[in-house]
Image (cartoon, rainbow, N blue to C red; front, side, top):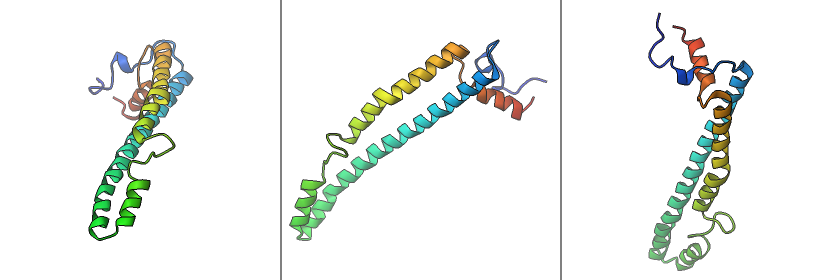
Length: 136
């Protein structure tokens, strides 16, 4: 009986001589990378949400002025609008530093390990798991 479409193929078959522990290690590294991708998404969400909140403060200030609360409006403008989220940094700078540093190194090292140990094949652990869980 043939395997269903997508279940086979050289890109998802372990190279000859690749042991189970190495496949497990590559699967672990892949899982860690997927978690870093998710963390990066949360960082971008943080960046966008912080910016949205900052722009909403323009409306807050306008409404406070309209209601006659000039002191509060001025204080929000002075102390909060456009403020660094950490000393010397806006969120876009955090995103750039994460992308260019930790994230780039993580992705590159995962790719290098996978290329050296598995001929660049991705998701070998998952492909084998799929074959075990959905036998043909």
